[in-house]
Length: 319
Image 1 (cartoon, one colour):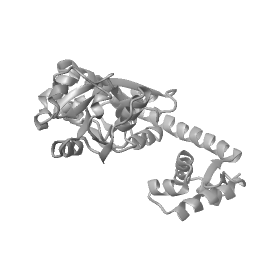
Image 2: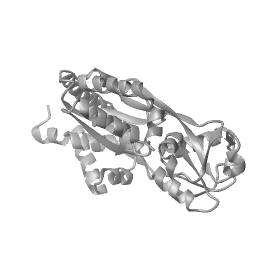
Image 3: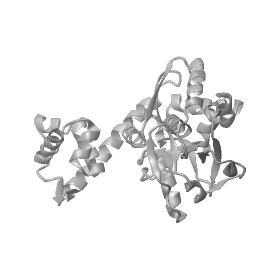
């Protein structure tokens, strides 16, 4: 049996550090993501190793790998996290649908206007339910879902960062197409533009690790077409549009939802790529979340909201 000092080593923070390190397999990268120093991270791992009496990682060159003990601890850590999450969900299921907090993570590059309008409407109906809306990166979204820090994620699917759907559910919001933003009148007269023709000019794109950058790169590879020359990368669709409209001979790509919602901002043409690059904006959540009364009610009210006016029509009305 562990003494008090050893039990303190296994507090939530230390296990979170260990779990994060297993995802990145890099002390430097993990410390940066956690906002701590590398020595502090190393010290936490060594404390755990002293308690379990075995090394958790071994290194070959500059790379680190899990030992058998590390693999066993990781499995047990996830089981413990799942147990805590399940207990939390069970407690919340006993709570009222008319009170409490719903924490939502929204992909930072997704169009937010309809979600924001719905939260205003939902607050009128349920003023005692607090809505926390967080703009997050893809990695932050997934980490927060796994660790039960958010109830609902709004993100694009499919997403390869989700390794297993065993305990997760999704609810489609809309299918979104990728549009080429350009100044070519010949392309504008067509219904679509081929991957090859879309590379006639250099691109401004999202940052490399962003969902649409990875999705578009993958589609180009699958089509055996060379990816266009990239001259600038941004994190926001507003930044991409501004850069492209104020530059000469530059294309960019943006989701149709953004184009619809902000049509008044556009000075350039918008043409879908062919073959179409499509993804589904969706709610993603742990399967037990829909049993929590206030979350079940939230999703039902969302359906009622869209029954009155479709998602696309609401995007258009936001102009």
